[in-house]
Length: 159
Image (cartoon, rainbow, N blue to C red):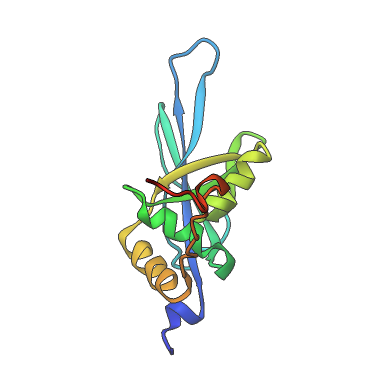
């Protein structure tokens, strides 16, 4: 196979992180991942996309979404969902949320959540779904599980 999507499973992406003001006496604002887009080489330094009195959005480039064969089942499960998604791991640094890792694997995302990391879910763009599907088709093979019968059924005779 000479398909570059399958043989070189990495995709440069950028993450959009946003901040919204809240009318809440316990929390004045919330940060969250908003989406992912192809990274066109704008660099890793955050770029302000928009800002007004109620919200702001920042673009963080320099991420590379890497696929691994041992995660193929998790990718398959993601693609099988009603709405495939991208998981964005981020941390607060001073006064800004900063993305740290991006994955499309349920397993990797679960491990980050188990470690009490902040993980947001954003919709997976159609082009990324197609890219991921090519990888899954090339590397995922469902494991057939043989159903075992309880010993009480073995040798039972019905009359």
